[in-house]
Length: 224
Image 1: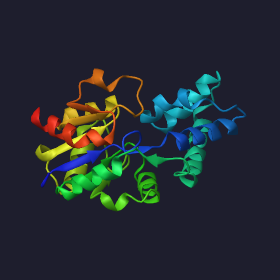
Image 2: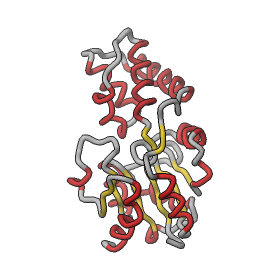
Image 3: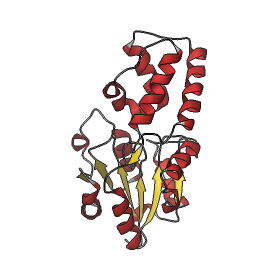
Image 4: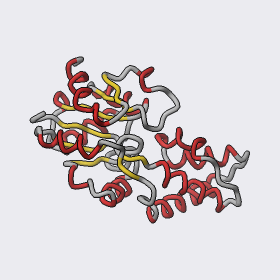
């Protein structure tokens, strides 16, 4: 893997963030006097960001708010989430060992996420893995974000890598579309946040557990 850059999505790929994101969503709903919603109702919307989770929560209650009030609700969601970012969130099983192996084989690691950069760094710092990554690009790092290919291409360059020696690891149609647009091989995980089976999205390889990552990367590269 010497000279290769392995780029990971964050929510639903590196980290199981659903517990804290759902909790923050229910906090926002509570500010509107609404009851909590089930995690299963919100989980598929995590890949679309905080606004989508809040809107879904409101929709489940048949409730809506004016746009200015919604933006205030979003700001209060972010403030609450930032203070409770790693209460229930945790790395997916097998991830630490996979990162150890990739780094031992010479790969550079990076993160490409549609989560705000500051929140992403705070979360990965709290989980003790931020130092592993040579670069991180969030939703607000560049002028564009996923699924625009320049989000992925930009973080590869930030890590000192090259697009023709890179692989994307993600959990959603957004990640797969981004990798395709950037002409970068993509490995999809089945344990993330999407209503669509990632197998139906035709990534280059699929894994059910991080123990399978090394062989999946090899398969993805072989297809390119």
